[in-house]
Image 1 (cartoon, rainbow, N blue to C red):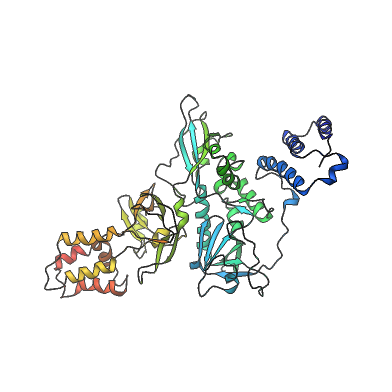
Image 2 (tube, one colour):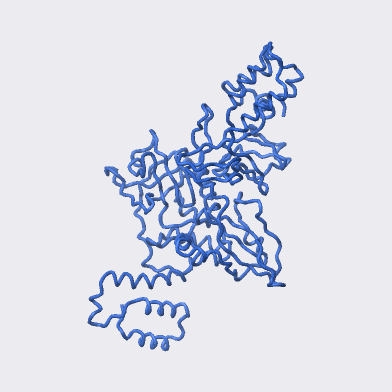
Length: 536
């Protein structure tokens, strides 16, 4: 603390150390104004509350002005964790990521006891990766351009970056590519319950590790938080101290402009960092409606600021137009239209024997047309289509090209959405196609297709070359997880055609019924009908 003559002393220091930077002098000024004045005899009588409030008032402006790559105070660095942390393996099917720093483990009969001890609810372990903070998935950065030739013209949208969803997709891809997933658990296995701390939202603060094969049979393990920071999709967080591994990785990404760090520096200063954004929107939401100027604009903003991900999140009106050297640029935070992607996950389908299904976590009202998740990154080029060894099970034809989601990437969750009522529809088709009944007419087929379509709550949409799933109807608020259904194609042009091209590809009763329709003498289809009904 300081005595009542601190202002005189501060003036003396200001004159004596004129070479100090303005930022350093500002810090001294903040400290002088933030702390209570104590005379020498009473300084020891200051209550802990007074001391805490004074230091907190000093630290607030200091942290606001601090940049991510400023020198790191040594006292902030957390002690290095002891070697040999204890890890427990998590099954891929039980692990779900909902943003770049939060995940959830579903507990089932095969879950290890060490993980069961960490449970945060009856059958879940919610986890928050410590000492880092990824961008919020509910916010996007919108960049605006104003003509330098005529400043009276208002700003118009230049581009939008959905950095929260970018972080989520980066993390999901890392997990998908990993051979194994582990979570840090207590060293002492004899503990009755986990000693891992919990945050205010009831999530365990512990690290997740990913195992990758090195080709020699051994496994290389990397911390997900450090890996995410190294790729430029999370920030070192200093509320509880700095993890130097994460901080060094983030600084490397920032220097190399990887991930989100190819965006303007202003986005990573107060008040736009995730921890500041959460608080700021509660206390002063109007602050984020302002257009903030971007300084030091690169020569070609469209090239410099574009996302470098293989499949960056996009919306229909995203664009990167040309710009002039004298154009002015601004930015502000906007609501992310793709945030429902965080609630999508795969689990066992409610359709018997259908394998996985796509589900939406408990949610508020979802308007028709809202983006749900990605199906495929881009259409196949003609040469790729000609050389494809795909099973065609995930291949969809659209007016914009042919898409294939054969390979799971961790982000193309749309591949798990099932088509409803397929088996009942085929059973009905078989019944109507069995002799001596007359052949089905076009109205019969349309009625069956209409029933299937009515049971779907999602549909496909091409958005800037990506094939995505969007809500087909308004989804009402739900406190339970909801399965997402979509229509792959008609019974004739998808299901029967696929089974004809690759007999047995669906298996079970579906394959059996299609074989009856295409081959059985008891079926009332003519050869001419079979040649057309079973072809794409």
